[in-house]
Length: 135
Image 1: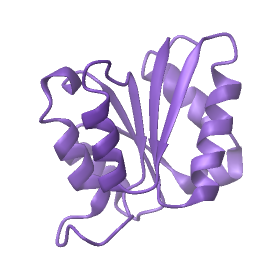
Image 2 (image 1 turned 180 degrees about the vertical axis):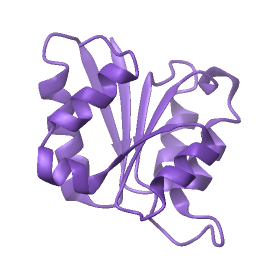
Image 3 (image 1 turned 120 degrees about the vertical axis):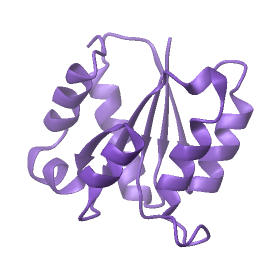
Image 4 (image 1 turned 90 degrees about the vertical axis):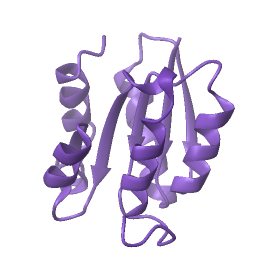
């Protein structure tokens, strides 16, 4: 079973990502967990350490508790401190203007929310194929 964590403070985007993932992985058994903040996502990571997620999708701009670091950056940095998550695929989905720079800095993949708005779930499907997920 493919375990996925979706972290976004916006309910609409959490639902969009969850619905898209269900369609994209229609032939696979998947489990999708959602979190509504970086802190909530971190708690879900701790709770799942015995059975880690295979894919983490996260927004960048969420709660402001981590200034000067943005919440999504803090979250990704925390995830990478867990040995069982070193090789986990992480995908940033954000509307932030410098998403590519942030993703490169953190060595993770990214998609712009603007691209998803215009292309539906297709850009996400293509990105997951690029990330070598079996669809």
